[in-house]
Amino acid sequence: MSRIRPRQRATDCNYSHTNKNVPLNELTSKETHESVTVFEILPNEIICGICEYLYALDIYAAFYNLNSRFRQLITNSSVLLNVNIGSMSKSEFSRYVEDIITPNQDRIRFIYLSNLYVVDLFFSPVKIASRFIRLEKLVFDNIKSKYLLNIIRRLTSLTQLSSLTIMPIDEYRNHDEIYRSILNLPALTYCKMNLKRRYDYSGNPTVRMLHVTSPLEEIVILQALDYDDIIGLLACAPHLKRLDFNFSKCRDNLPAIDSTIVSLRLTHLTVDMGLTPFDHFERITTNLLSHLQVLHISVKQNKKYLDANRWE
Image (cartoon, rainbow, N blue to C red):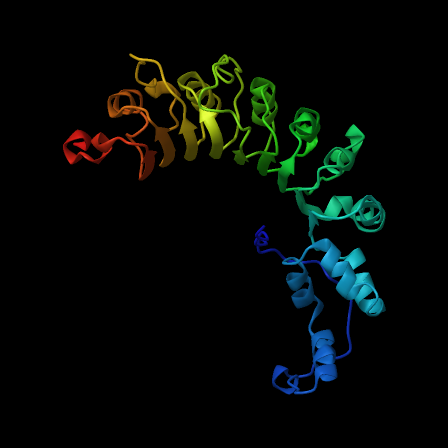
């Protein structure tokens, strides 16, 4: 899991120290114990900037008991926190929530959840989700799909949430409700998901009748989508710039996608066409390609996609 790169911001740190006038060229030392002193001499603004690259648990483990200055700095400053809840016991999770997460809910910017038993607990009861007022990025990795719908519905109050990743451990069939809840998130501009629908799935289309407008600008869907699903997503995302999806087996004689629902901002398209014939791809994507700057295609056992004459 890569750690998110913090945005540039003016950090509000008002705690003073007594060594501001020491030149940086005098802060070098070969002794290990003096290196600690050198770090403590750094201005609060730099220390706060370093903390934005670290997870909250690491920050508290490193600095909370160091001295009173650092304790005040990490508990009272405006530094936004990143939370990673992976492998830990229930008792460790309870202490983490009580000591770090609950007192700092309004400072948490990023949450990564990959623990099967804490996902539902983390956002229960419903009112807890609304307290993460600064949350910008949320990742659910390797979780059970039965938790998904209730949790996503609780996210509508998060007006800063711009990035959502959903990777359940098992297959989820009720896609329409998940899509509807995601598309209704008010500030979401990036979404990546894999609901593990198979290519041979023969259910009804899940997106085309949602009639919602989403601020999404980038969508990455790793499960297979059929023609009607693609139509529905395009209709719901008029600001879409990047689209990445897997195309399921399609019916014969499908019409071209209506140009009126295709975002004029769509410049990047990545698609896995599987065994779809080139004729089908050419017909249905004609109106998708007009404004593209980058196109990535994956296919299986079909050399017609390599025929340069077909692309003229």
